Length: 260
Image (cartoon, rainbow, N blue to C red; front, side, top):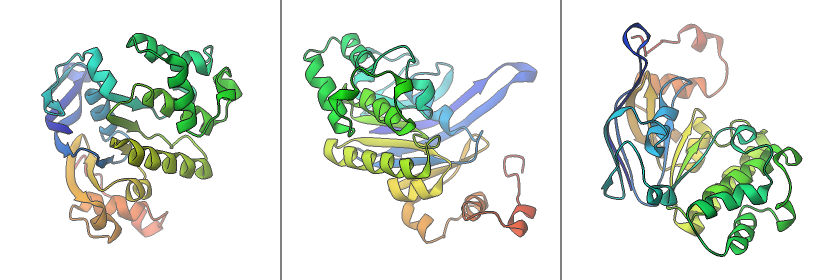
C-alpha cells in the first residue's frame, strides 16, 4: 500500500542546512500496521509529513497503492490517506464545534449525507451525538483525540498516518485510544503507519517496524524480534534497553549513534 524509496528531506541551506531524513526506504503492505520508531529528532515525523504531502521539498519516491506521488497531492489522495496528529489540543480549531470540525472535510470533498456521516463517525469512536455541538475546550484530552480520529475516518480512507497519537494523553486514556484504533483497523481493513518513540506501543499495535536514528533507517524488523529482545543493530538494542526504565550503568554507556 505504501512504498518509500530513498526518501530524503533537507531543511535550510548552507550553514543552516539540516538533513532530517536520509535515504529512507521501507514498504507497508495493505492492511498492515507498520511502526516508525526512534528518539526525538530522528526524522520519523518528517517521513510521515512527507508522505502526507505536508512537506513539498523532498527527493526520492513515494508510492501509494501503486501510484507514484508528486510533491503536491490531489483531492483524491486525501480521500484515501488521512492523518491523526500528536496533539489533540492543537489539531482541533478551538472556535469550531465538533459538528463544524467534522462537516468541513465532507464539504471540501462534496460528499452527501453529512448528518448520517457525522453520526456514524461519532458512534464509531465511542462518542454519542450529544457531543456534536460541543467545543474542544468542553472535551477531555481522550475525547478530543477521538474527535480527531473521527475526522480522519469520515472520508472513509484506506490509510491512516498516526503521528504519536497517544503521547499527550494519560496512560489509562492511551490504552483506550490504542484499543479503539485496533478495532477500527479490523472493522475497516485500514493500513496504519504509526510514528512513536514508545516500543511497548509498537509491540502492541504493529507487525513490523523500522528504527530511525539521525534521519536514517538503521534496522527493519518484525515485532517478534522486538519482543524476544533480538534486534541486530546496536542502536536498536540501546533503544530497547532504555525503554525498560532508567538504569545508571546503561545511561553511563549510552552512545550517540547519530554522531558515530
